[in-house]
Length: 404
Image (cartoon, rainbow, N blue to C red; front, side, top):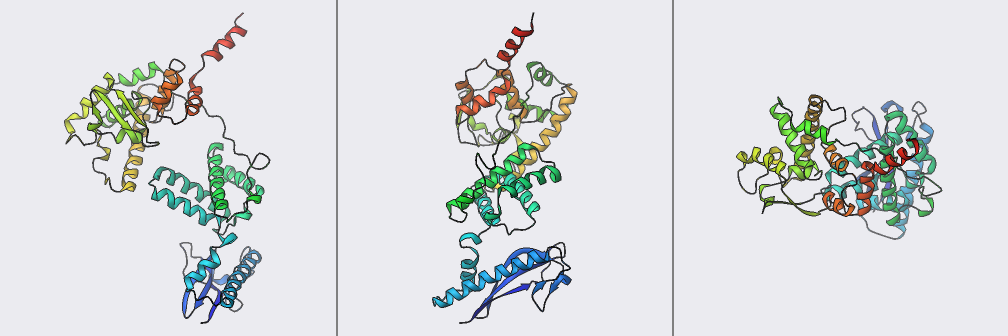
């Protein structure tokens, strides 16, 4: 029952015409490959000595990595043979490359993405997949052991993201949060060493910058409501925006998922998609006029109020997500045009409906009631959010000093 491991250059080029280096594991004439995560030009491979030629960039580092991977493979094969374990070639591969520290950051990251996809958390999946792609562009290899994610690695990553991708501080902090989440997952699986954890008060600290949330005021909203000479599509975008605003800044995904049977006893009943919070609100008069605009297209009580999801495959979360994402982009494009016509200098998007509600609410509504209206799980979230729109005390304090 012979088995062996050998370094090879697979003759399967990627889209850039580069060839992958792999460890070939063979047992009983059955073969499998474990890629080391690097690609080179065909002419940079020494077929006789099974090494990367000096003509290739980073040839020394690549050859050291090749030797390390081959050593690990042969060591495990000898161990299995000495124990007389009858294992398949794929089981051998799994034992070699998915035990202990051999599991890489990107493998655990993929587990995280798979979990998000299985849970149909597609919005989070989209953003996290993009962040992981940014990390891969920086490292240029999927072979990233957790012990290499040091404070120095993260500091250089931050500089790279600022310089090469012009990412905001908020986006960079989101990437660090994702790395921390994946690192903690690896620690729980006993893959990463807790002693090498690069985050903490005396190490890499994740601190989000303060952001300014700007909402429209009453006068600006009234100008939007009274606009005439809008296109059919602009009228529809305005209706969606006002529907959201008049229901305490309801999120666009929840707006488009509303159905006619969510409305009964002159109240609107719905479950928030983000945290499954239930809410029942009296239908405002301004919402009634919007509903009347769409009632002619109602096919049944179970029909969607708005048209965007009428043709969606509701059994396919990806199709629903795609249609919601497309709709949001179209609405934002049309709201930009509406903002110009209403002579509003502030950025007008679907999400600004939520900020606008908060801006007008200010400090006139009790935080506990705002928490209910916003459907926040934690009162602290409401207080932090509403702090963006409460200026009265600061204004009065300033006036008390300078007004002499």
